[in-house]
Length: 125
Image (cartoon, rainbow, N blue to C red; front, side, top):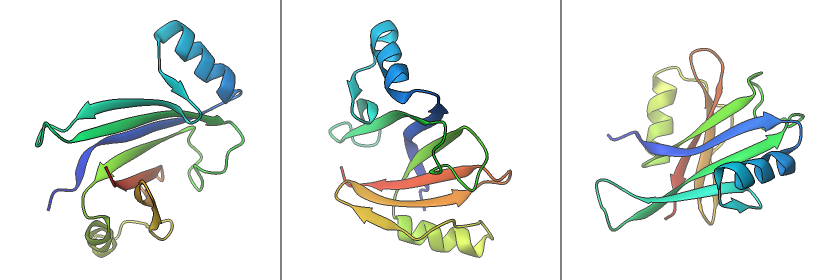
């Protein structure tokens, strides 16, 4: 079973997300949107299938990265999230929450070997 298919997003804490987004937009040309910046690309296995990676600064007070104490979280694109979660449970991986479904895909959070929160995303491209 193919597990991770790419990086879905890079999320990090900062003092002022709006100021940080504006800085990156001005100095590095990131295409800002209300959630940070999105980078579109085409999948290697199917060069006709468009995908995206999200870059998002969060307020330093966010609880979204909990229970991890880290100031960052990586989102990985995956295929067949339900099957992957079942496999991870069998392997003893900590599943933080239940799978949630939105119009843009399914999400769940796990903890890696050092307790960093990792977001898994099955996109609905």
